[in-house]
Image (cartoon, rainbow, N blue to C red; front, side):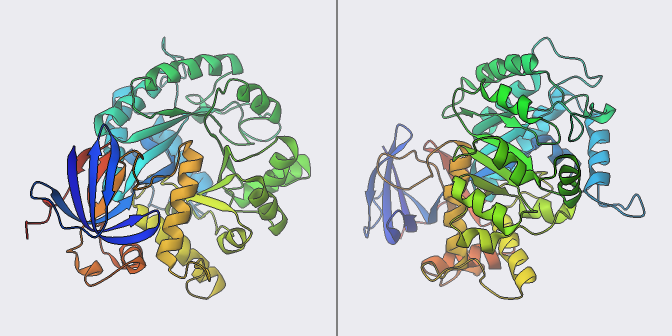
Amino acid sequence: MTGLWFETALLPGGWAAGVRLGVAEGRFQSVEVGVPPAPDDERHGIALPGLCNLHSHAFQRGMAGLTELRVSGSDSFWTWREMMYRFVDRIEPEDIAAIAAQAYVEMLEAGFTRVAEFHYLHHARNGGVYDNIGEHAAHIAAAAEQTGIALTLLPVFYAHANFGSVPPNHGQRRFITTPDQFGCLMDACRRAIAPLPGAVLGLAPHSLRAAAVDDISAVLLLRESGPIHIHIAEQSQEVDDCLAWSGRRPVEYLLDSIPVDDTWCLIHATHMTSGEAARLAASGAVAGLCPITEANLGDGIFRAHEYSAMGGRFGIGSDSNVLIDAAGELRQLEYSQRLALRGRNILATDTTRSSGRMLFDAARRGGAQASGVAASEIACGQPADMISLNSQAPSVSARRGDSLLDSWIFAARRSLVDCVWLGGAETRFTRPSLPAG
């Protein structure tokens, strides 16, 4: 059994000092509190449960930084999307494997121990179907295996260009499947992730623009278990188009048309009314928030304060992977609320007064739910999935308890994550363990 000793750790009951963990067979076998390290223990600073990245398009990490050049009189999400299509035209399966591996390493370095990969790039450059329709999914699974990150794979059903089953355009040819092809894709994805410990297979209708309700109902029959994700109400034009087509807003239309429950994750949901937010919160579904990407694309600001006050669940994802930073996503979420409402510590509550603690706990629980797994905990019998922060970094000097989270999220210049454990296997990034004594 491996012994790990931490100056402090966030346990289910709260913060504790002098925490000694025994790890064997991928799980925590013992948790001792208020004890000195044993002679052979590895010594570390601050232990936290790992976070789930609930929304990633791994291949887009390869185009990060290449879309910050103004190309028209009015740049928007839609002009960004055209640039993304041009990037997609050029990449091959081996490129996807390399880009995904790089992105997943960066996620581990940022504090994510699992990624929910919203995988919609299926076909060859000419739109042709590979002999193995899961060719790209297999490369995603290989990247997860190579890096060690836990994987929730979400094959995406994508059939149309816009509401009303508008035929897909040329830029979308690598994404499109029929319901029958999608069944084959699900089978291929199931095979691809079979060797990965703890891997989860869900599915994802891309959006109400790309998948009609009848399509969604059909592909949901292919799901054995696992979460269901969908992009929704990301852009105001999307809302306007849905209203023009159906007379209802996207979130309203989805909730009216399909039984949405706690297995669902609605990605973005940026443009909701108060009534829609209340219905989403009551459903038990998770709002999948990607604040850095949403800011980069000019999407808008999610109603996080109102939605959270309604008991709504949320998690965070890195989406376009323009910047992979778990603490940065949480910081951007809180700062967006401060800018919109002109106040401070908006998402903190009377019960959880620390902004950092509230954000971390909510993202840990919501991200896990949206990934189809139990939330990480440093407790006996639980999978040994956790991260450590460098307690010697100036930004957390002399901090205790929740102020460690506040300082990591709001005051650190760079990631403080120095080690990550997945199923008890350790990856060390920046520094050795603490010296004896």
